[in-house]
Length: 283
Image 1 (cartoon, rainbow, N blue to C red):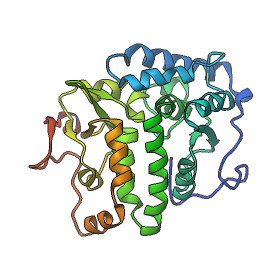
Image 2: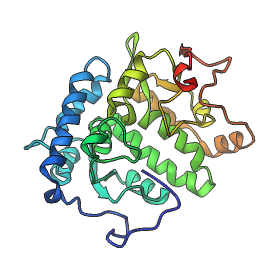
Image 3: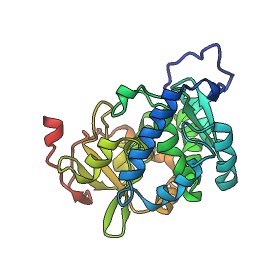
């Protein structure tokens, strides 16, 4: 939800928040949410991390359709101290990090058209709320998101946002997590997408590689297609521990002179769960 080169629209407050405008949603808007919600809830059990399914209860509000952010924030605040605020779309990096650091999750307030159910380039309210909010009800992941926001503020001062953005991409948006002997989905970009929910776990094309902080921060990513590699965390506790107990300043300095890795690359010391065929990317 962040982009450095943006101009604040006149209707937005200084922190880029806007009213959600829940009363302005049409019956078609609510029906689109319900369609997306129903099909993801049907397919995700057994594929997504159990913490996500538990957190879905925070979205089961008093009425069907797009959640009212005020009611949603009341429930989320009681669970982990987070709230959801509406923004007009992408926001500048400093605004994004400030909201996360203060346990505010920014969400677009528009929803895709019915003919865009399977793909939308810019995150809408379904991606932002369905994809992200359930895990914000989990205390450890909620703490990780705040720690990421605080780390983003420090990274901005060191000119290292590009490095840190890869951590967000490969965890918060497109992360996998170990679940016993299996892998499970948790990234919002996956769990809010029917097609990527299938691709990320079942397709032979992508690599699935054990999470390593340095490795992730050196790896470029795809923004226009399915991922060529997914990184697998051991647990949310481990992810939070690494984030809190790593001194990022010398890490950024260390990585400054090192080359980036292409998204499909497998390194000799990678912990490989699946060596992908990359057939999808080549096709």
